[in-house]
Amino acid sequence: MGVRRRVREALIQVYEQRLARRLEGADIPRHVGVIIDGNRRWARSIGLDDVNAGHRVGADKIADFLGWCDEAHVEVVTIFLLSTDNLSRAEPELLPLLRIIEGVAEDLSAVDRRWRLRVMGALELLPAETVAVLKQAEELTRDRPGATVNLAVGYGGRREIADAVRSLLAEHAERGTSLDELVEVLDVEHIAEHLYTRGQPDPDLIIRTSGEQRLSGFLLWQTAHAEFYFTDVYWPDFRRVDFLRALRDYSARHRRFGS
Image (cartoon, rainbow, N blue to C red):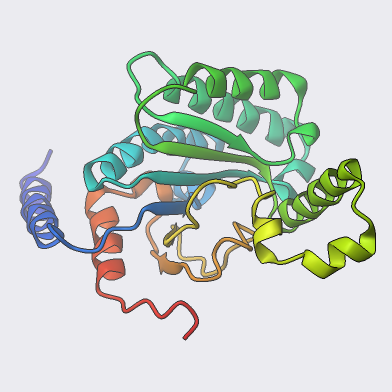
């Protein structure tokens, strides 16, 4: 490592420590959502022809990120790993990505981990072997004491809302509720109770890497009052100092909740 790089890393470490001290006692989000974007562009930016190398490096970053969330006492983390749109990719591109996601689930459910995993998305659209790995990870971590980590795989915000409404209608049909009766009592809380994130607080902070400034269908219902933090950093290059910057930005905002 060159002298300039060592000096730069030392300065970043000092700055990181200062940020961490400033956040002591600050308002910290209970639920953080993250759109991990830029893996492919990161791979190309360093001259790699295999974009899956970017996905693999990005996958290794996830456990680090969850560790930083633990340090900040974040209770729930939702990670956008694969959208329903991504499922339309050609098989030679999609299958390696699915294998990488399976590896993420296996890593996060290892015996030395504390996180409680929940899988959310249209699992019926995924290959059976991928679903089996995800479900096993969920089962293995069911009783763990750490933060809840939602793995959004085959996820689409519009589909989630449609699934919630479908589930709600099916539930009331079993009870014998007529459509007219349901119309009279239906409110937003009834739908929220059927979302993939039911029982969890809505996200307070959404982080998206790579410079894109859009949700891409991520948690459309739940982000009504969320704060957003966009960074130009590609996900494989995302560091603890970048996370602390996001928390600092969040803590400095005055949340109005629509008022």
